[in-house]
Structures are given as C-alpha cells and as structure tokens.
Length: 179
Image (cartoon, rainbow, N blue to C red):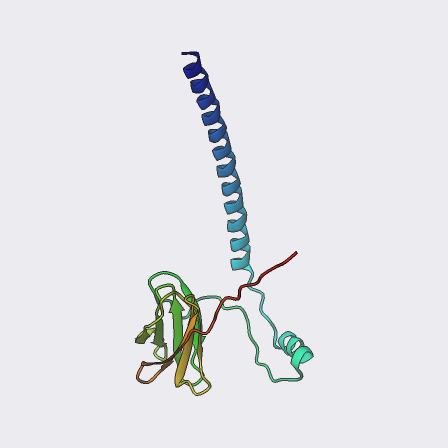
C-alpha cells in the first residue's frame, strides 16, 4: 500500500514536470514563430531594387565586363498555378521557348507553356522513384535532365517526352578508420 502511494506521488510529480516542460516548449515555439513571422513581413516589405550599375559592378568584378539590363525585385507574381501535388523543388526556364520545367515531391517533371500568360501543362515526365530535386534543359531546349532523391538522374526528350537515359552510378563509399 505504501509502495502504491509512493508510485502515485512519483507519477504526479513526473506529470507536473512533463506539463511544465510542454508549456516551456510551446512558449519557445510561439516565440520562434513570432520572430519568423516578423522576418517574413520585413522580407516581403523590402522592395529595394538592384540597379544596373550595382549589378554590372558586382559581376564585372568577378568575371570581367558585361552588358547588364536594369533589374528589380518583383512586386507581384505574373502567373500563379498549382504545379505539383506537394512541394515544388525545382524550376527551370527553357533556353529557347516560353516553357518552364518544374520538378516536385510527387516524383514528376512537368513542362509548362507560359507564352499566353497562363500556365498550360504540355507534358508530364515520369520515371523517378523519389522526389525530383533539380531540372535542367540542354542548350537547345530539346532535352531535359532531372536529378532525384533516389540517387539517379534521368534524361527525357522534350518533343516526344520519352525517357532516354537513366544514370544511377552514385555509390556511397565505405571507409575504415584505424586508430
């Protein structure tokens, strides 16, 4: 009977400690979220443009003189659309057409025609076994390569949207450390 009473008291103390710890954690999460919200608000309100002179100076200092056109932070989205089921992790413009390729967590690469001011899906490239993390067109815009979290990269042709090549040569190396 005395053991049971001690166990009940111990459980009560442990429960109070857990509640206190949960309250502290909740407070820290709320504080962190408030800080993040303020930082996001400040970033959204920061509309400083980058002048052509500033851009030209920065780039020419690193790679030599170039021609640059004026640029600024966008003030609004030109086109907004749901590209994938879940997170979009890669976006790339075609070098020749008004086409955009997107890759996402849904393991697909999608091709979008944006020439008319709206995003029109022109194709879906499938074959990845994990989320697509990077997409890239070749210099002619005729092929696209995508790298995914299954440690493989795949090449498709844009015109017929067929998978042409898969490469999964990545092999984790094992090391033996001897002291």
